[in-house]
Image 1 (cartoon, one colour):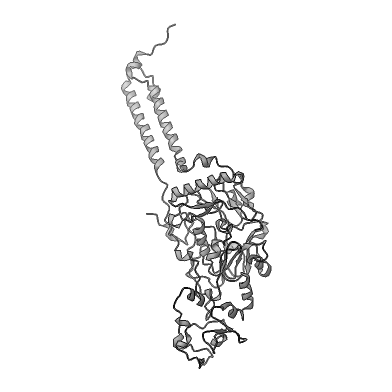
Image 2 (cartoon, rainbow over the protein chains, first blue to last red):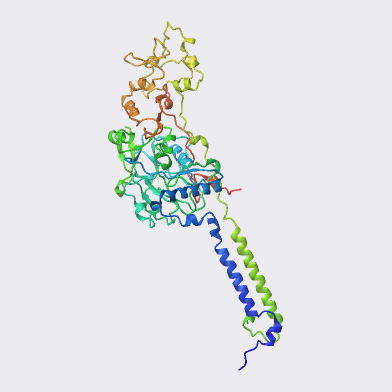
Length: 313
Length: 223
């Protein structure tokens, strides 16, 4: 038996056989299609191996955290051209935060909504806002009757009251229970936080929250650099990326440094009060003791909010 | 019949080249299409105007006497005896309905303290013996820089709330060991002559991801 020799016809017909040519074409086309299908990964250009291999927040040593904060500062500078000051502020001892909102005073001016956006570096387009102000008819506490989109020339309108709703910082938070990766948890000062580097964007928490407090970054957030707040915290207002959840965190970057939240400072009628409920001399202790504290919103849900609505008269 | 499945030999080399050339062009076209679409940007979102910075201001609505002194501003409004005579307390005149007739020199004052229109006497708060000071109803004199003492002489529960921090605006530090809170006084928000807070223009409503009839400007495409 002699070894089979290629047909003289084929070798004379083309230098390359038709089969191997077709294979080459198919392979080239397939590789091109694969590369094209992986193209969205290029938007993760900032995803370094350093970030990919980052440890879970609660397992990080101070040295690990230092490196992470330096990385975030680098990334923000790269993206916005401004060097931020990013800190990892821990809960203070003997402090549990409580928010009280005076429904008698609120005039529905929505300044808190926009002060929050400015403080916490939310995306301006698409717009992400942590606070929704409900315009509600007198005589009812039914949030179904609330209007988010009122466009009155001036507020308050007679016959209505205004109820701002934001994260209620529940003592029994349903959002934390449903998170499959422990990317959100309650800290000992009562603030429920999100690690934006750990969130997988499944939006279970958004569905679990009875207050519509959680927001999802459907697209890459857009913040004009001149409106970027450079005082940042890791669990707070550092810029988020596409595909992660965010929500009100009581302005961690301010409140854990002893300051009032931004929505409180901008409120023109002093309807918002904030403080340490474990301190009997704080404003919130006085309010819960002396005032007609009417509701914890949807208290029948058993979430036990740390956000109280009260009335003056 | 598909020529690819034909046996290659037997005189159809031209047709084979024709097909192979066509396939090459096809694949290259596909590759080019993939590369172009991989680089393209997602469809532009509608433009959303940035919120007016006036809605971000934390400044108080009004300036009190103390603020004017601090800012070294014009205090001529408080120089009562530039016009009035120290020895002759000005006489208050009323119309037929019992309302105070505001003289034209004080035309900027709107008399609106209380919805019942009964608290309409200047000397309920101003001191007729010395117009540069104020007085409470028991005769105690109060200076212009101590407003809460005057207002609180009638609005006791409100003064109590204000002292506890439950009424009025506060900014700065909730943790008094880390810094001082800044408190505003009554006249920073309330006009003493017409204390009810006037209505205001609200900031714009939310722009939703898929459009909101309340904010139609978001329906315009970006340029």
